[in-house]
Amino acid sequence: MDEKKILVTSPLLPKLDDFIPYLKEIWDSKWLTNNGHFHQELEKELATYLHVPYISLFTNGTLPLIAALQAERITGEVITTPYSFVATTHSLWWNGIRPVFVDIDPITCNLDPSLIESAITSKTTAIMPVHVYGQPCDTEAIQEIADKYGLKVIYDAAHAFGVNVNGESILKAGDMSTLSFHATKVFNTIEGGALVMKDEKTKKRIDYIKNFGFSGETTIVAPGINAKMDEVRAAYGLLNLKQVDAAIIWRKQVADQYREVLRGVEGITFFDEIQGVDSNYSYFPIFVDKVKFGMSRDELYFKMQEQNVYGRRYFYPLISTFSTYKSLPSAASSNLPIATKKGDEVICLPMYMGLTKEEVTRVLNSIINRNAIQ
Ligand SMILES: Cc1ncc(COP(=O)(O)O)c(C=O)c1O
Image 1 (cartoon, rainbow, N blue to C red):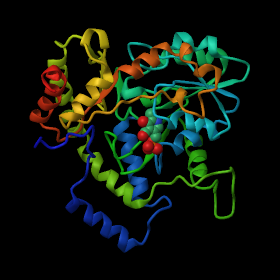
Image 2 (tube, rainbow, N blue to C red):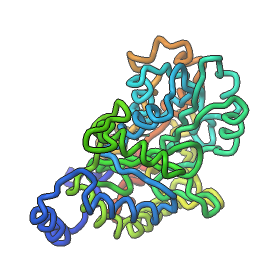
Image 3 (cartoon, rainbow, N blue to C red):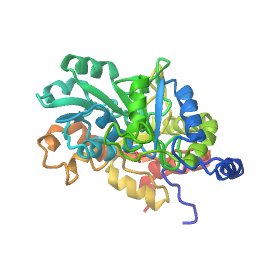
Image 4 (cartoon, helix red, strand yellow):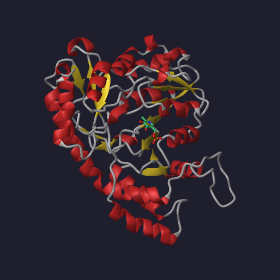
């Protein structure tokens, strides 16, 4: 086989020539981290771009989850989804919180609000939903339950950069939302992340927490951690922000091409556009119905690899099956039938800016021509 490998993702990189002057400025100033000018500028530009009131940059997308739970002093039990990247649940574990898994909605793959109430106990203090693949959660239904029981809501919005619902940023839902700017994400700072909050007081508290708890030269106001973003990555982020709209438009064209062909393929389903939602096309998951498609997800996944097409089985295995969590009562697969099914059926197809029409056709052929390939 002479065709080059098509991988599930490829990072959005700024032009090296554009980055050099930024690096020179950092070298000249010798200001490498600790709320430098690029850090401040990126926070400002991101708040504007994302239409959110306050944002605090982090060094990755896991630490803002941990910091948000600390800032809200969350303890006891937190209701969350098993259908996510493992960092969601790990953030609870690192805070000594017991995760309580609730099944997902079969249409959105997000936490099913109709199942939340029956999982609430006297120890429940918060809900941690995920806008998985950037698909908006039912934020209204979740907030109603949170208000009824006095619970905090912290959204893991790692996939939801730039997603709006009816013109409003999805990042404004709940008490706080986290973002990941990992290299694989729609917008990346190589490693990086952020926490979005509603008021200045919380922003200040989070800024202290991400810097060891320092509120001044000699004052520590909280048991903080070191989770700051440095100047080099903040500068890189400023450059990437200039091309993120182009990246999202490109991704939409890839999604359109996938949808047009896959709509006619028996046994393959996928997400369609949702009215009123500005999507970021961060992932293109397909779900393989073994009976209707005539092949299991894993059979297709490895057939695609034989044709040098490398999808990823996000999110399989479920977080609830990992050794740390599998003995929790809520982790039983009988409690999570939809998540289990989705995890067994999913393949995320290659999706990135720069993926050509011909390459998308190759991906599609690797699915459609499955029986012709031996
Ligand atoms: C849903 C979700 N939450 C949290 C994270 C953690 O982000 P990071 O890798 O930037 O720490 C990721 C991703 O990578 C993710 O996909």
